Length: 472
Ligand code: NAD
Image 1 (cartoon, rainbow, N blue to C red):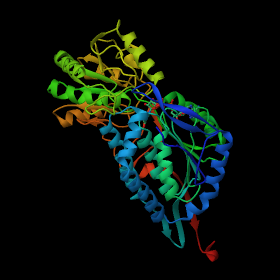
Image 2 (cartoon, rainbow, N blue to C red):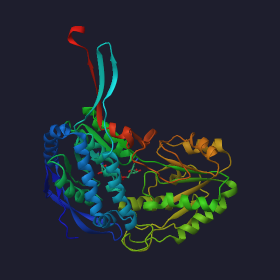
Image 3 (tube, helix red, strand yellow):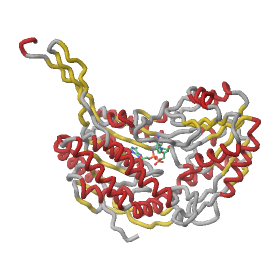
Image 4 (cartoon, rainbow, N blue to C red):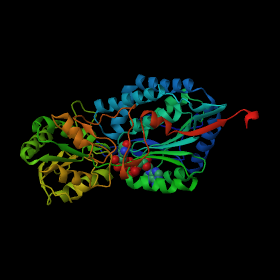
């Protein structure tokens, strides 16, 4: 690819200190160079964001929101270019890449429509107490490789509307859409308000330790999230962690197994299973189990696995070699523990392709059931009794999402209420909405993204408690 990707520091598009290859996961071969930042460039970005902060924080929220909307407009105007780049670096089919780009714009617009009103806590006997929300300072957004643009938009929207300045650092295997967004940002925001830096996984600790940065908005694995929390503690930074999940899908016994298997397949295999809230284990009652597994296997065999840039591709490659090897090893390990009824081995072609794989009759303690697979492989488990099922579902350190399927809404909701995760969807998939709070329980995260509460996480609450001088 001939595009000259640049970092964004202090309103300038800058070359890196060196460059590194970005690999197209559909070929396994480099297709572009990414500029790399070093510790000195991080300092320059912190200084720029720090200089820009007072002016941006003092800009009325309506004007900040208008700039965020302008970014959303600019993104939509170039949707095809962004989608093609996203498919090339991330692997997802082009139609899904387009949805991610438009989804990013949608989220930014949703935050641009929100406001931070002061609250009068008391207005009585000459005593006026008001709580106001002020920005924190510099927010560092650290993002993973599964939805590089969407997850960045989830942070840019609230951080900038709330009046913070930013440093954004994408994952090393999907940095390019972030840099392209940086080009749009340069033309919209004052210098230093938003900065984009790329690394090969070494800048993270320098960012999370940096005393000049007020908040870390992190999305990634639980293991890295723990490191982020530990290293942020030195300066008592605010931290939002959106981490891993092992979402269970609970099928109740009153459904048509073929109808629900289709939904569960989609929920497990979209983005080649690389979604924090993908269905990662399915629990099906004895009476429906065989029909359900048969339909999943049929769908898996029918699915078109191909380069996301090719027309008709439904499932693209796994995003990077490391994850490809991890998922392939989990499948291999499951071979002797359960029965693989579809898929089961990487495709014999270049790139990181694993066909949708369905594993039935696998025990609860198998690594594929206990760990977050983050790939196109689904274990299907039997159950006969709801109480013991819920113990199995909840017996995990994760608590992100989950689904319940039933023709009886009240019954489904009663089951959903007993699942210990931040969101449980009933009869629908991944209905994440920028106006509805989203959070992980247990080791799936800390803090809230999305909704008014998500916006407020990018602020601090300050109380002003006043009386007249002669009353004091
Ligand atoms: P990861 O934790 O390996 O990397 C995420 C980011 O952290 C990358 O930008 C990486 O460069 C950076 N990083 C690495 N080491 C760091 C350190 N010591 N300090 C600071 N930053 C560091 O995650 P990944 O493999 O890129 O993404 C997959 C994971 O993300 C999965 O577990 C998935 O469930 C999770 N995820 C969660 C959500 C959510 O909203 N809960 C959404 C998407 C993905």
